[in-house]
Length: 605
Image (cartoon, rainbow, N blue to C red; front, side):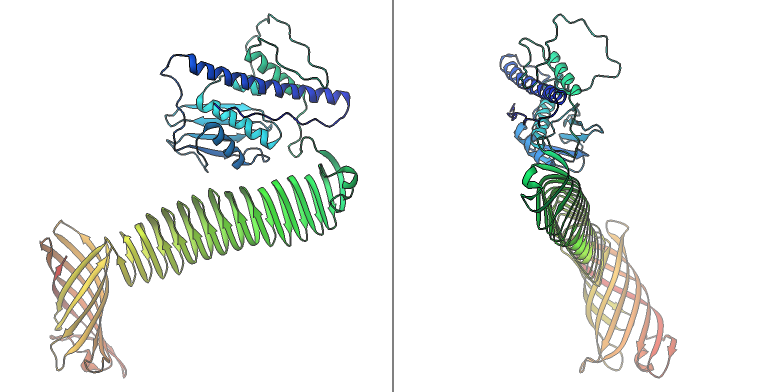
């Protein structure tokens, strides 16, 4: 087990003797907990070498890694930094996930109301273990402490780990046993403390817990080692109140003319130029040019220019908004970039998100490079992750393994599975599990593709030859999905006072009633042309119901009744039925006649 070395605590600012004693006591408790963890690590390593094999040892994480779910952790913690620290501790890949997945080893980090954190581990075999600890205020040391806890949970090495970190006792603790040895006196201010030799881990843990209880906890919007000031004002960094206070300060109210630089803002910062906070923002920054927070930002950044935050819980409103970590809230501007997961919205002309999951993007151009994308609304949307739920725009492209719904003029899904595509042009290079509805549809496999032109690479393809009672003979192709097909054909009308060329286009559906029998319900349009000039002479609209029977695996015969309506410019050209037809209407420019008919044909598979 790796045990990362913890840097010594920074020296607290000098204050009253009483405050110094409290700070020293808190430092003593933390150092005691750290020494205890090292002792536990060494003891675990020694036991692993000398102890005989036991069947009840916990399993190490598999090569596929562990999922990390961050559920409302303290805002000063960077989830990506915690992930990296846990991965280093476990020696395995750790992936930030939006939710736990059944059957996957998962760590869930949850923040508690009092600033503590709870970390639970669910193994692939269903084993679950959980601990609640206090963490140092410094983000780096907090990530290391959580990583060390994760290693212990995964390996299940120390049942007393929570006590070492200061876990609270139950509300009704058992009666205290008389101690055989007197407690050592607390160290004087400024002296280093160490657990007494031979002390049991439980005793050291109780000592650390008592020290933490006695020491005041820093506010959540504070930075240990930094000076807290009510008001600061600068023309430039170190030109103004920072000339005397320095830049390692946390301001409640900050005013900057050209530029200002502080460690943190726990309130409001106003600037005509640039506002810079090196560690955190807890409140609001308003400027004309730029707001820069190099650490986590909780609150709002509002500017006419650039907003930058290490991670965001709140909102960024500006021309260009950048969050280098996860976003919980909203980014609104001309151009928005989020490197981490977006639990909220990006609203702008162009939005880019590269995190583990994206909730909502609304803009002219949206790009999501994540494992899961929920909604994109814009002129052009691109999702390159493993899964895409909804895309609405003029052009949608999803390159992940699965795509939910695409609604636009042009839809392209390049994954293994596609749900629903609605647009003029729909392309799915994988299998369509739902439907395609559009003018032109293409898919490898599809149960339902409805359009004027459907191209299903692994779908049904038949060659049909059929004839009508009106003397029309047509040869064509029938191509489609499992239940929907398109019909394309050319033919000739051989009876009448002159031959006519025929083109046919239709749409239909298939109902399989037996391994060898099926029913096709089709609607077709036939256009009759003069052979010499190709001028349309008449048009026939036809609805037909066909019963097909497969004689051989490659050959079937079909036939059935039809209803026909002819449209022509002259009554003579509309008389296409050999046994007469009923007039539906006639005027100087057109004539419509209807009659029942019959269709007979053969089909080759």
